[in-house]
Amino acid sequence: MHEGFDCGQPDGWAIIAAGNRDSDPAVTTRMPTPLRNRFVHLEFEVDVQDWSEWAIQAGIRPEVIAFLRFRPELLSAFDRDANAFPSPRSWEFVSRILDSLDSQSNPAIEHEVIAGAVGTGAAAEFSAFLRMFRELPNIDAILLNPTQEPVPENAAAQYAVASALARCASDTNFDRICLYLNRLPTEFQVLCVRDATLRQPAIRSTAGYTKWAIENHHAIA
Image (tube, rainbow, N blue to C red; front, side, top):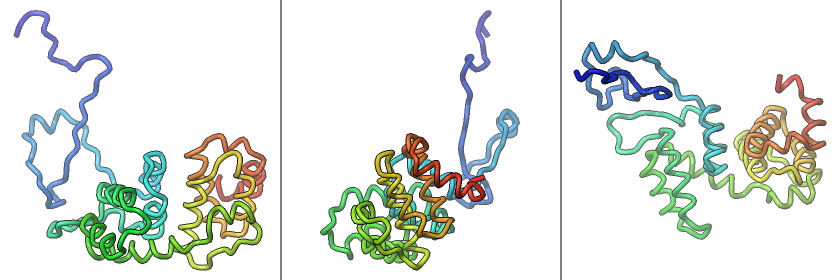
């Protein structure tokens, strides 16, 4: 070793490695013992709320986020024998697929491409959810008439409309959105408000948000 050579890591740097566990049965090569001993080993679990917060800021489509909140067990469903299976990575693929297809695309082709990303079972459920999502009350109509537009009755549709409203919420329309939200069950109000303020922090300065937060402090504490 040359005099003065620093074999440590530079100031301000950290070495991070990610990999699968031996128990996952997915492409793993065991680290040599001296190398393992030089790491702090942490295990992370997939969490729908954490993923959703990332997805909102990453521009993932609201129908994908809403579906996975409705069916959180499908965010990650590893299948070592399948060519395609649900994972956070493959649901991002689905969002990109929807971005690349226009509204007039053949539903059968759309379904097959989605199945190629997340597998046939998850794709069948998502395609059914997507049909329902596309038949929701028009968001523009909700903003124009928030006290009269119909409110969905089933949970899947409520997840969908809450996510769609969060996607379009801003500090200029949030007061009207709150008028509609007040007609939804509290859990969907909270979902929409959290997503909306994560995407547009200025919403927290609106009168609608202040009034809603005071009335629902028990739900957001």
